[in-house]
Image (cartoon, rainbow, N blue to C red; front, side, top):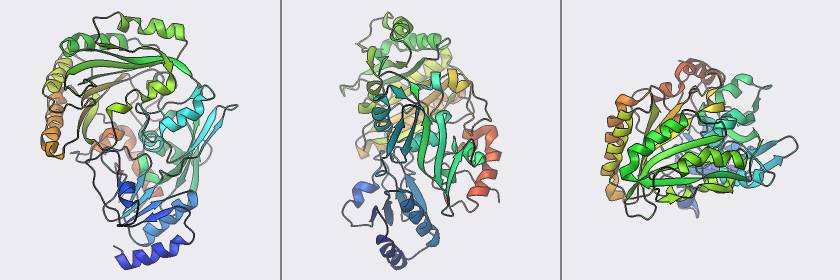
Length: 460
């Protein structure tokens, strides 16, 4: 491991050419730069390299390699496990790199690694175009895409990674590679689901599709006493959804902070307004909702509907897995879990995201992301504000996960894995694609330079 003196000298030499900022402990802006979305994460890098371009990324990678520093990479900083920041090493921070270029004629967009989905959508929606992005608009494009990319358009247009045209990557040896269907095809396959294991993704090019700017979307919520009926309705409706309609449901706390529990369905229909109106009618005519804001609205608004539920700095701990099926037993168990949730925060609870349509029609081995069938991603999301509640709020998530265990499938969604997973959760996230990913990891990063991630181990 490098000494403080040698790191100081190396960083001082880099200052003359580095276009961004190099921050050390005690520097102005250091504490703000090291903070990520999850307030439970409190790590202190020896050096933060706030890059302004690809050359800065290359210099940061070379500095870390030459001085034997552990490296973390920050795009949007949303990862719940806090893998964007490192204790005592070098944090490569892309949050200042915000370039977005839309090509409306060819329906593509190129974005740099610090862009969030809200920022991307604002530019593409100016042209009536979009690509599948995050459920929450403050999420970074980089981390979400590299690990999969569940989002509001996935039924019609597939996951975020399914819309990639190319990726620009800085590898562990400091090379800058283009990965696409024509260049470095194995690497292109690997980064579509393989996370940050293969390098720093400096920029992404996506296919765009005609969406909005007004779509049919919103939230409908019912009293918690109706949870069983609403979840069974959700199960019945999702059994035969049109591709244009993507839905999620949650057993969550009310937005007023009272701790009152609700059952909610959130949705986006990206097709014609008349078709959207018909598709959501069964939800709008069911029961006696306490909230119903489903209707025509801008796509950017749909993508930001849940932003207030997940504020930066809140303390987060997650457990997740795919469900085998949404049985009556699973529904009853979910209700039981949420009934004893200790937090009053509005985003705390159990969430189901439905995967179908285009996202499920791609072959398991076509991309590194292997979860290609109709089904549900289960997320037990514990969120609170007071550190004194850490133990009981984390215990609730673990106990709820244990309650749900008999209903779970084997697959894991790599973007939702927290810091303390047991067993080989990464192998479970990649299933039959894991051996090929290990071979490619061995080729592009044989010394596991990029290991502060959901790590794919190179072959020994």
